[in-house]
Image 1 (tube, helix red, strand yellow):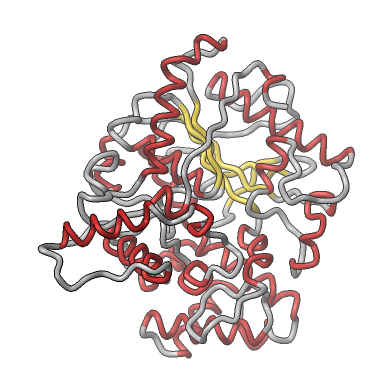
Image 2: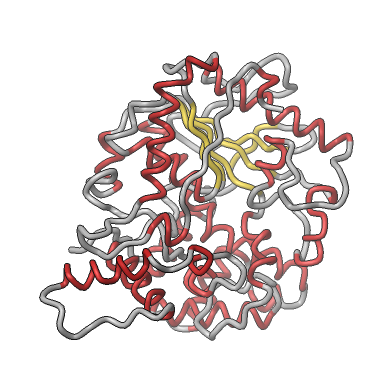
Length: 422
């Protein structure tokens, strides 16, 4: 679909999980191997794309979810930030609280995994480096299939709203704190957006979990689940139950009233998860772009259909645009393994989406006579206006502005930001 618009599309493979982000917390295994893979792929593209009809001086890097974080990081790293001119971040950014972790947390997670696999640290290591080398040698001999990770039942993600294996500040590809790198990075044209209900997709992954009382991510939306979230928020923040309930009331409505309407409660629940997971991080990206980036185009993907959801409808409390909806219509792909093909309206939305995005890739501006809408760039001040990707796309405003300051206060209590040791 995309190459029909006169662009050269390069897709890459890179290491994930323990193979991509294994870390010992010292110089023995610094981590970030998956990010290095992407850097090398970008470097190769820069050096060779002219052989395929591409322009090495008009490269756009795009990613969705963790790929959006990686795209953002590549635009900040001193090693890669001058290799491309535009970026597209979809359903994530480095402002998301799950996007990075500390090397200490990553190293400890890797050590726990090694112990589960049979590594038994000795008591006679001469120093920490010797222990790390022993750990690394053990892991090198573990069959790769035993190092697999997945989202289904991922207790760290659904209980703590974070990922244990992520990029870290390593002193090399990411040599400084992200805020410092962002201040140094060149201004770029960009697209950033989210699905209408980003967390709706994760019903699939959380439905098999038996979450402890402190959990935050049982995305089913029943009254019992909401009680569990309230207790979890109180436990993590030190706030009282009544304080948490008051905060939820200000953001999503009165819990007593919501309990009377199960569908409204489900929507409020998923919206809360969406705010924590993606909305806040992308909103912060858009706000930062107002002052520091070249033209940025924001979107809100509300379009959905039964053809898109397929069998996943059985796990969703309701249907809406969600995490990865944009990928489905941008690439015309059956991302959710739906058993039926796209209908006529689906294909029209897909054509509009791909046309606008590829026009941005070519010219830095998604507007073209071929699409029936005007996509305004994010203004340098005031409210964030976004393009609503639906059957009849149009600009909308105040999607997040009315609640994101309150969400920010909640998230600061939940996730004190720290990517390096003090």
